[in-house]
Length: 479
Image (cartoon, rainbow, N blue to C red):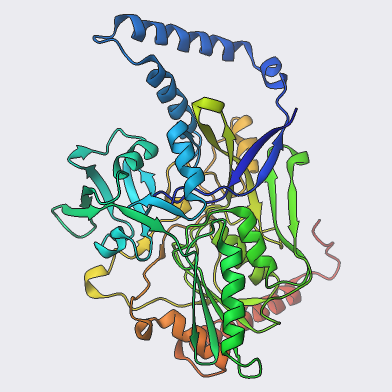
């Protein structure tokens, strides 16, 4: 019998994490047979500790919670994106991926035992209350977050629609924490917003849920009706601060603008689990030029779309380096006991790039002008800044570890990238550069980047020429 599990590539808390497809898993006794004697000894050790706690703890403990906490601790020790969901959390996640749920509208992760805001979701209680990316939630309704799992913290922020929750937030640059009261509401995620900007179609994708491709298709159709094809200069696809979501939706969105070729591949521990997703003929934009906006808050599924369109030279990327989440999470149902969210693969762009803990560099790196009161607070550490993250090129690291060698931090890994987006489009440097690029108008930021790239290429050519001249004629090529 086949066990069906659900794959995830993004974590959206408040929106929850999103289901991304189906994956077959054949459960055999292989792992049990291969388990070492030492492993069984450790399991016996765990059983001894469990019995001791159950019999001698000062109060009678909830045995179910003891086991769930042990499972949760085991998974959280793997990487920042593996976790245990109890039955309620699993049901909530399934509802959330449909694009409508109750909550505050926060995308969060766990950092050093505290809940860290990745970004507030547009037009939600959190956004209206002024919660910012990088805020640390230290207490919920007076209860300290330290010691709670990410799921427990999120559960405390949920509640009946209209009820109030108080968050204590530590913000960089402030000595005293902020007290913010939010009223819970039904969060309806419009995964795609669009508008006509004269002769350009603007598409804002806020996250990848089960409605994203359909919403995108409808948005493009509407823009094509509003702007005559001979006047339409192209489309801007804005995935800034989009934390990701459903893998198959990222594939569909990429496919919508590609005629052929690979979109993304996933590779797990076993070679036979590798998967490739390819584009089919048909471009909903009718071949119009594309610009994709990314920043430090663009993660996971957003990076799949950006990477695919960049590798195929279908779109020009503008903004700042993306988050760098290049791993796939599979949701493994456990019946009445909830589900496991387990990292099972890395994904790779069509050119074979792993962006894990590295991110995607835009073609034009353009920083927004940061207001004085937000300077130093706009940067997100990214995947490389998360404790316990998978390394870029983890396969080599695992080989070194097995050989007893020390594994140093991968030089390809990069921390930190700005995630600030002005609320006023007129002040949005990245967006305005994208519009100018599509219209063929000069833009100081674009010109500066182009000049820098030209000088770098010229210098590289000179160096290469010198190296060639200095090389003995009888030298054999390196293998």
